[in-house]
Length: 154
Ligand SMILES: Nc1ncnc2c1ncn2[C@@H]1O[C@H](COP(=O)(O)OP(=O)(O)O)[C@@H](O)[C@H]1O
Ligand SMILES: [Mg+2]
Image 1 (cartoon, rainbow, N blue to C red):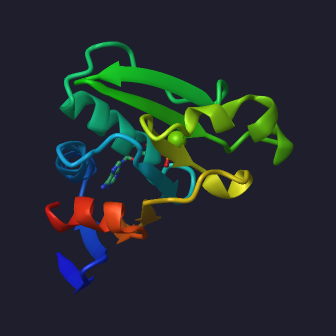
Image 2 (image 1 turned 30 degrees about the vertical axis):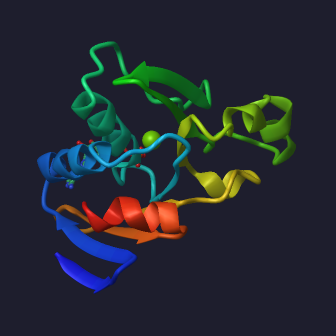
């Protein structure tokens, strides 16, 4: 692991288990209201990371990718999680029309795949997953003081 500065961490995730281990560390640090943007190509591991977070929090139900529904809601370990995948969002207005703005309420924890597809709430934490010949490179940035506080202990 290389610490570039307080707010930016890059790490090599050799395999899926490494992604799930990162997810578990992140899960332990989540606070109500956090907004986490997930960047990376198709297959980079964005959904895998969210699944890992939910499993680490003890979620037992089925976890499906919100590829078609755009949003999957969860309640686990006293936290309200909202998992968005906006890849199929055609129009920026769809975010408003779908009422997604209301999900940004200071309590829900938002994980947003493809945040660039809409005017989504600003990120506390940005996670970038890059596909390497073997494994993935994760770059994690704390944008707000809340986000940076969360990453300090990761
Ligand atoms: N660190 C890793 N190294 C190699 N493969 C990984 C790693 N993390 C996850 N994967 C695999 O990559 C794929 C990621 O799929 P998914 O999470 O659906 O991607 P995305 O949501 O970014 O499109 C899964 O098949 C998963 O097993
Ligand atoms: Mg996905």
